[in-house]
Image 1 (cartoon, helix red, strand yellow):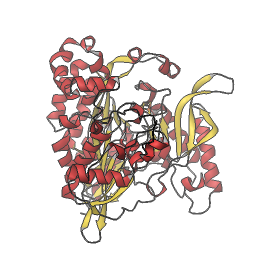
Image 2 (cartoon, helix red, strand yellow):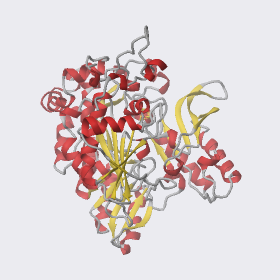
Image 3 (cartoon, protein in one colour):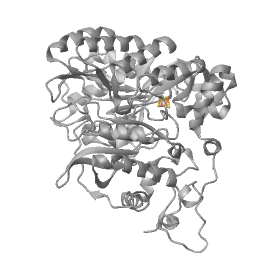
Image 4 (cartoon, protein in one colour):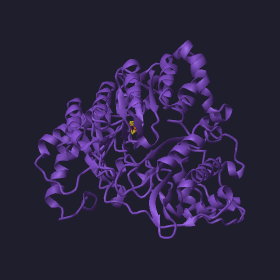
Length: 564
Ligand code: SF4
């Protein structure tokens, strides 16, 4: 069936336009930059610089020009635009407080150092790769390294002069930073226990590897309306609800193991849960279906306004049925097989602690606080893992690190070797359940500090609430600004960084509180509570109070999301 412009609506369009009515005198909907509808003129500066020169071309300029001539030689469009396609953002100039973030021009916030994201598709790293990351961190990045909630490694303090050498070191072990940021297909999340856990429905790793090999760095997919986030998992353990496209393992009653297909999830300042397309996708077809949805987003996605340019808005406007119809008719040229829904667990597993592999070996999961590690810590982990007979680790979407393939008799030695460096296998609820974004320390959009606050909060809660025997763990998400890099809407206690007024009337760093969000069975967004604003200083007391209320007041079996 041919798809016409009448089949499409644009965000913010009048009801008449949404219904497709062609009434006389109706104001024509404003073009949203949907290429499939012939709206190819760039409608904002981001679209202009992407159209002018494919952002992937910046790699050659970094190697040949910028790393040789230095920071000042970088053009503005490359620095604040195309560098992102190579995983590079300028980091925040030190000493600028959060109150001034919105008042300054972007260049006034730019430090000469970069943040660099290394994509770790599926979260899987060999020890050789982990050691290369650790070595880069200590050599070029002032020993900085964070495990992000996208299973990436994030470095700081990178100088443009050092980028080619860092890439060489990464590429020597099969890693890269291509499309780690930017309006393109970002890192593909995957089950951190894929291929080893007992009871696995289907191993997502081959599909992830094929998507990476065939499509990452493909110039025909490097100018999407905005970022495009993917997840392929067997057991709802790679946050499928909040990705642009997700495949979740499910057994079809006739066809066997395959994947349930979801699209249109995402958080940021307007949260949407992904919706099912009602299709079952066999493993061999995952790359083709992924490619179809990515092209659909490229061609039909809204490009006029950056804050409406995610797939979630198109899916919201078209609905799942229409999205599936376009996918089938225009991109796959065939029908998808109808399939059952994958069943969500009560909450996504974090795999911290000791878990059984199908082959009798053990998974040992470690929790740093909010993903903060260092090159030194990663070196120690690699050494300890090797001594325990393992050759690989995985990073998780909950900012954790798992050592795989540990012989049962080596587990205790591994834990004893790693825990003195910080990450814990025997971790408290608070250490396990607290996520934090990059925050004021490095992020130019930040209003408040996050990582150090997370460490303080975890320490205080461990000492004050250690005796509480919580039936269900409580998660905390700490964001440095209204974006949602630490998923505040889906945390039990979500904290959105902003400037608040303290008891003396001073403007200070603080948080707007959201309560009762969740993923998995409780998937939904927390309620923003009017009047629940807390200063950063009062944060530990506030969280303690809320948790004690929950502990005292909930019915047996009632989870935080149901109680809040
Ligand atoms: Fe930066 Fe805001 Fe994202 Fe935190 S939530 S990393 S402050 S953009």
